[in-house]
Amino acid sequence: MSLDNSPPPVANGEPVYSIVVPVLNEQGAAPALAREIATAFGDRLIEILFVDDGSTDDTVALLSVSAKQIPRLRILRHRRTAGQSRAIRTGVLAARASIIVTLDGDGQNDPADAPAMAAALAADAGLGLIGGVRRLRRDSRSKRWASKAANAIRRGLLGDGAEDTGCGLKVFRRDAYLLLPYFDHNHRYLPALMQREGFQVAYVGVNHRQRQNGQSKYNNWARFWGSVSDLAGVMWLGSRRRDHGGVDSL
Ligand SMILES: Nc1nc2c(ncn2[C@@H]2O[C@H](COP(=O)(O)OP(=O)(O)O)[C@@H](O)[C@H]2O)c(=O)[nH]1
Ligand SMILES: [Mg+2]
Image (tube, rainbow, N blue to C red; front, side):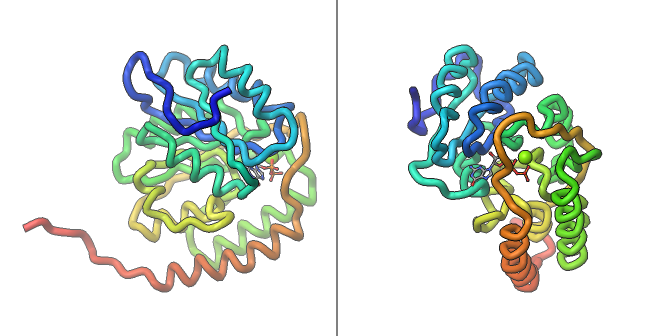
């Protein structure tokens, strides 16, 4: 079992995409998802980083078995649970590719959508991020309603134009992401934070699937109260932005 941060040797050069998957107690979904990601990207040079956030089930043990069959799979593990945003950040810091793809670890995002999104980002130097927009949500009615309301409030207050920041499927530039402030749940504000740094952001409709295993880690009320302070913080960050209009080298 490899739990350290040292990258395994790569036979054919550096990966072009690093796929980062945060997981917390996803033993029923994670191994199949790792295989699906490897299949979706075919023979493209990728690495797959699963970041375990202190699972208490068999997620890590099962992923370690998968890694024997999928040499491109790396597993990182937090010693203590620190949240989805922190797990994404751990994966991005360890990633070797300049383009990052993130996916939820429960299998609700469809890896088949990812290669085209990554290629679209690679082809457009002005874009910092392409966010997935779940076309048909496969979630409970209360979650869909809460998500719709949260998205509308955030969009209205931040003006980030993002219809669905809760979608775990996103592609972005590693160096752009590393310019952004980290805070718990910052993964829901990546479009606004990217725009604040001057990057363009685009959106694309993606597939969404029913959760087949395990349980959702978020409940609506906890998310609501967290969102109030997160939104206030991101609005403050926006109000403190100043723009130099470009830098000339003389
Ligand atoms: N690393 C980490 N991942 C988390 C945490 N909470 C949720 N996740 C992962 O984030 C993804 C989305 O979470 P999920 O519970 O499916 O949220 P939902 O789709 O909104 O119900 C899944 O891959 C989870 O395993 C956490 O505290 N830490
Ligand atoms: Mg989910």
